Length: 303
Ligand code: UTP
Image (cartoon, rainbow, N blue to C red; front, side, top):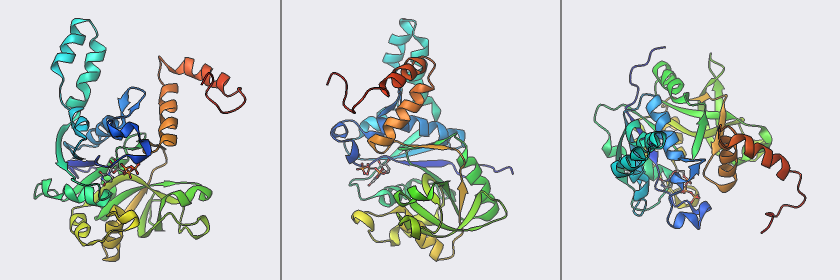
């Protein structure tokens, strides 16, 4: 199905405290931690641009200016690299600034993902009926699910989220959708959402992922919810409110891969996965890992 410009703005909330990466996040925003050599937020910006977004609206926080600076041109660095014949590196420096137009809004206090998304509402133009939200610490692979989500909005209206079918024994780590089937086996209508249910109580094995295509009604719902888990305003509570009020919400079940960059364990996996696939670093890392896995004990050798 052809879908013409279903959304122009992609909101990327990047104002969290990143406490799971302390002490690094005292000074380095977690959204800039490199996956091999590229920050997760640049990968997500590329995904938004590929899906047809023309503007990345980064929700930033005081003290996290480096996130936005990453998307600004650095002409001096580029010309130094070019003068040294390092054109490939200069192209890497240019890439983030060339991907997509970037705008920012500030969330003064980290009051939760729902609050962060709500801060972006006034920055939308009057004719923007829907908006994409991409969490920069969630890599959804391969890229392309947002295009599929836009097709589902064109067919069913309302809001469309992304789900992963995870093994039932792991489901209690996630937000879980209560769904009913549609004619398309990978598109489900959402009846409810439950946060981190015990495995035997989970209404399905479809877990939430950090991609949303939200009708702009979400901004009104975000004003009407009260703080939930951890005293924070939760985006899922606003989506649940819309569902309760009869607004259509569907999920696209993404049959690809995923990396959670938001915690050190998931980040380590992502780094190793991307490094193994890298033509320069992959073969040596593969050999080292194979040897490393034969060592006894879990300590760092030589530490
Ligand atoms: P997370 O909960 O993974 O990020 O939010 P966090 O709060 O920074 O991490 P921890 O729990 O302290 O380790 C998902 C995304 O939402 C943003 C974060 O920056 C992250 O990209 N976020 C979260 C906000 O923009 N504002 C908030 O108040 C909370």
